[in-house]
Length: 340
Image (cartoon, rainbow, N blue to C red; front, side, top):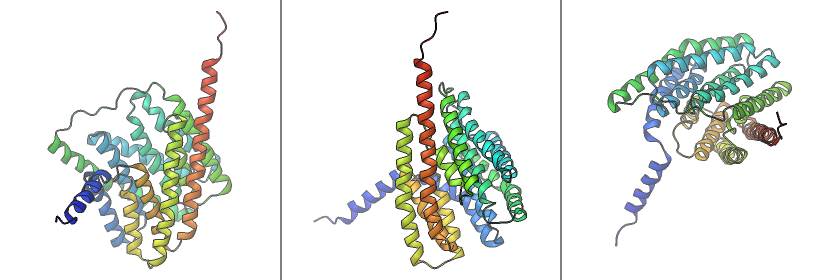
């Protein structure tokens, strides 16, 4: 009789190869790993946040096969957007308007090529996340120091991502970068994103919600097309949050608080942005590791609840914005035109 061990091992390898993007995961480790190592040496939390900048540069660079020159422009866009939102944060109405504008521009860029959406998303996400994260629970002076550390250290992330792309270009001989055909219907998604992000930012600022970046991120994330596609995206995010967050919280309950565990959980959460083929799996694991990281830092209960609630609130804003723009646009199309 044949042992079932070999077929089982083969099936497991096939499953992992389908679900995990091993080449992307390895490259992400190369650019994010040094940030975690620097955190252990310097004990500077800002260096962990720098990992988000690194992976935000890496994702479009790999997907779109960007040359170093374009990666440098992408890097500059992240820093400028982050700085603008960070400086505007004390003025709540201005912050809400600028955040909505950033969301609008992230999608509006597709009028010059549909693949600009990837670049736009990975400017908006790190800029908004970091602008909120560095101010969370600290004084203005400490937030400014944190922001300056991120900006001053960020060329390291740029250099690592550019080095990976140069290496890949020499091995693979990449063709010229193309951003695809211009998107004909770019305005409605851009408008829906701006509406959803503005509503989310206004809610965060009015009620001073903790971890408000998740609300704004989720609001923009679900605007992916028509109402059906956006609803499906929200369902995937809701499943990921409802499964991943409690499991991360439970895992954190049986593990002791640990600086090492916190750093590794943050690293793992960052890697989920690029490493999985299926969105729902990647997002669920991201929620798991974020809750686990919060547990290692001593605050998992509140973080777990906030993550689920913020994902749902932000996603709902996104769905409402998509529905409103579709309804208004259909009415405009169906409006009878007066004879000339």
